Amino acid sequence: MTQPKVPQTNHNTEARKDLAPQSIKTDRTPSSHQNAMSLLEHLDELRVRLIRSSLAILICFGLAIVFAGPVINFLKAPLIAALPTNAKELHFMGPMDLFNLYIKIGVLGGIILASPFYLYQFWRFFEPALYSQEKKYILPFSFISIALFLAGVIFCFVFIVPLSMDYLMGLSVDFADITPTININDYFSLLILMTVGFGVMFETPLILVLLALLDLISSKALTSNRSYVFVGILIFAAIFTPPDPISQIGLSIPLVFMFEIAVFIIKMIEKKRLSQQASL
Image (cartoon, rainbow, N blue to C red; front, side, top):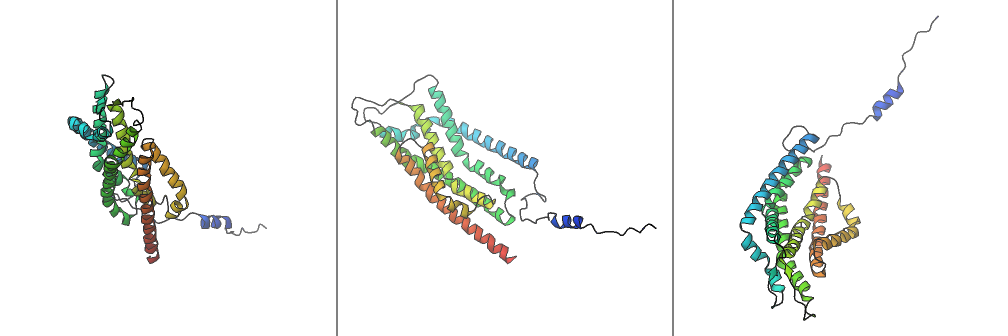
């Protein structure tokens, strides 16, 4: 006779169920949607914020060109003060040079004057990626980011540019028969690189804090790689400043100081998270 089949437990199936990944609850909830934003929604939001920022820069670009004359007279002052008494004039070398100068003034004005708007758009774009209790930092971060950028620009123009021009023009003191003939376009190209570079580099602490809020870096990783960070600061300082030690040191020292402040803030954030997790 045929023996009746006895149902057998599929241990492999049960084992697979035990090994199946469980859903992980997270605090990351979007600021304006009930469900997490999709990739296309993120890209669409990025497009909108880029368009808004570009329009703000274009408007400020036009305003800067309208007032280009007084702006040029104001911005050339550090170089004029550093030139020898017998060579207090700037020159242009070609028919397009003055036109290019106006374009550079528009670019510089657009970047600086529109910075409050596009920096605010930058921080709002990252808002959905933050924990719900951390979204309140967006507005303060926006104001601090604007203040740091403008502080970097002002610090560069008021302190670093005059020192750099004095140092570079002073190299001609030993040559009585050499008179500097400065192309005004060359000066403003260097000025844009330095001022915008300082403004961007002064954003370093907030960028590090943002990466920490996104769980991309930790204070331990930053402190253990401090020496590499300092080398990177020196490299960036060499890129955004003329090849003179004064301007490079003038950018490196504030960046090292702000890096240490960022590490301290990140440690405070990590402690706060641990205390919140322990209370749950």
